[in-house]
Image (tube, rainbow, N blue to C red; front, side):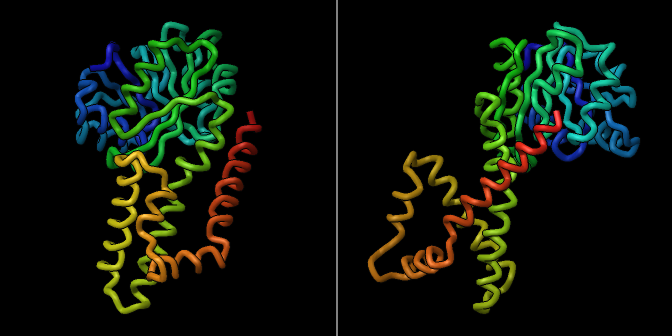
Length: 272
């Protein structure tokens, strides 16, 4: 159970709801320890009904009542939220942001001095408690702050912590990565469709194969190259497919796509 009086969540879209629902499901927090704020009355009503937490429309009121704040809003809303809560935030609170490409320095400049800020890059599989969340800390963060934030995000999947200079690379791999996986999965399913398989079956084959392969990497501790070689037999079907990938620059395309995503994340971060 989180050792806090009250967690305030500003922004209850899909990601905000996923994080809250995950914590409640894992019983690391109770509904009485939560308060939510969203600009949409419809969202406030639905979240209050579905998750049983108190919802308010005033971010300033929420910030005054909570010792930990989770900002789960879009990046272009961060400045407005910081302006709204500025007079209600103090150094004994903790502010956690999941806004992509928004640095801790950006947040610290827009909040009162010495307010501890943690930046998190989650990803969409958090919606089913299979997310990858990477955390980095601002200059006023202490060990107990990071431990608390880690416990929160472990409720929706795996976690890791890095120096902030690595966050653009993290964003390019795990933040944007689900879209790459879906593209690969869609292409494999389309190949099945071309070969005459029903689309639901082709999609199931591709999806379960991707899921099982990922779990095998995580649970075996083996490097992907070793597991790839285990599947590949001399003059077999797999090597034919792999050669076609290589002939079309698959590996370099994936690497370059991730590097491009990192460059874009860097560009967005420079708007601090």
